[in-house]
Amino acid sequence: MNVLLGEDSTRATIDVTVPGGFEVMVLAQKGQVTFWSWQSTAKALSKVGASTYPYDLAKVGPPKATGAGMVLTGMVHAIYIVTSTFSGDGSGNSVAYTTGVTGWGAVKVASTTKLVPSGQGVALGGAGLQDEYKFFAGALEAASCSSTLPIAKCTGQSRVLAFWVWNSTLSQFTLDSTGGLK
Image (tube, rainbow, N blue to C red; front, side, top):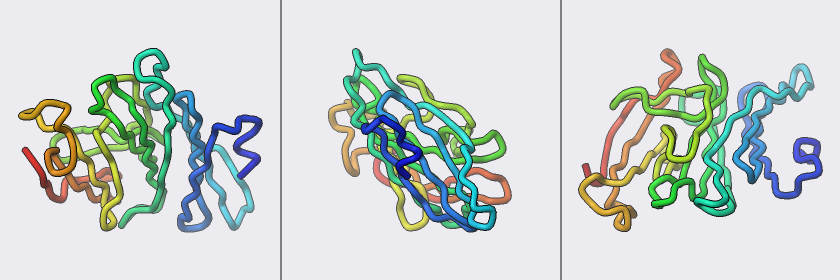
């Protein structure tokens, strides 16, 4: 994937095998991510999207962003998680990205029971941030800080946990279960 990194040694690629090929997220350290698709039958690599994550050197320091990706149960496209410190209070540390009817972008809350690929990026303090996203048993786990505790206690089971499953018919995540605090 050196061709995707160019001259910038701070970029990283996260490759995920998908039906018919693989998808790649290129993670830059200045608030940008790009998405690429390799179609095995066509033997073609093409850029399929771009998005952003919060970047404000003065407010939260250098991102030191890391990424992970996989295909969750029911999905045909990859979902990627970018992790760093994206908020001044420490409550926003993860952004998840995938594609849907609006193209590649951050996964954002549409209601208390659904998350959708927005086709948009995330600004500092903006919608789409979670304390933590991670992959769990074919689902997407989102952890957010409890409204009943101070931010300093936003760790482990002292957070609100939501487990989201992909609904391929609706091209969105639906709430499967919750845990932790309310």
